[in-house]
Amino acid sequence: APSFRSDMTVELVKHSASDTDVLWAARVSTAGEQSLDELNKDPERSKGLINFLMRDRHGSPFEHNSMTFFISAPLFVFREFHRHRVGWSYNEESGRYRQLQPVFYVPDASRKLVQQGRPGKYEFVPGTEEQHELTSRSMADVYRKAYETYEEMLAAGVAREVARAVLPVGLYSSMYATCNARSLMHFLGLRTQHEQAKVPSFPQREIEMVGELMEEQWAKLMPLTHAAFNANGRVAP
Image 1: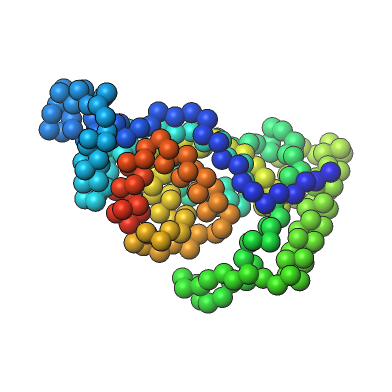
Image 2 (image 1 turned 60 degrees about the vertical axis):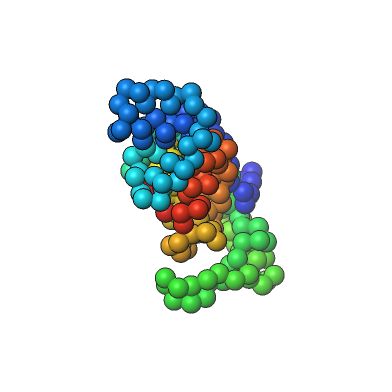
């Protein structure tokens, strides 16, 4: 039977990322082979350099690291996610090679439902209890019927890659996404709202939820870089 959820899954499964990575990458330009001495130094002593690089947008030193996340989210989130191509690698679950599982997105009561204003200058406000009830009920009904049809087609021998066409974009999928700190900062600058951001962003809430969980993990790995990102307006260098 179909199941419904409103949360997102983000797990950091592999990483090679620290603030020290930024320091030796930056200092090779002036110190050459002596920059190797930075590999084991305390980055706290050089947080001013990290802030300088962020402030003046010297971006390449922030690329010498790697983070791989396992992400489970609705298909419509991944379609937005995959617009981020520079500095990212993806491998997603395939509906051609396995039967897709009946897990679907239904927003919870905290999801603002009503859009006000014109494109580029709009806001979302909470919906009424009736609107939330209608949304939850309608989504669940459509999901059940769609998955029932999908299973019927598979049982009749229709290929998975054809039968999957009846499934809605609220279906959960899973993927691995690998990035570096610079590409992640660019993603966060566009896909999250934050009081310290110089440039306003209007992300869809569901992809913002993924971004918030990724940022939480990254901030633990590279706290000085994360702090400099916030202090300089959350603009990727």
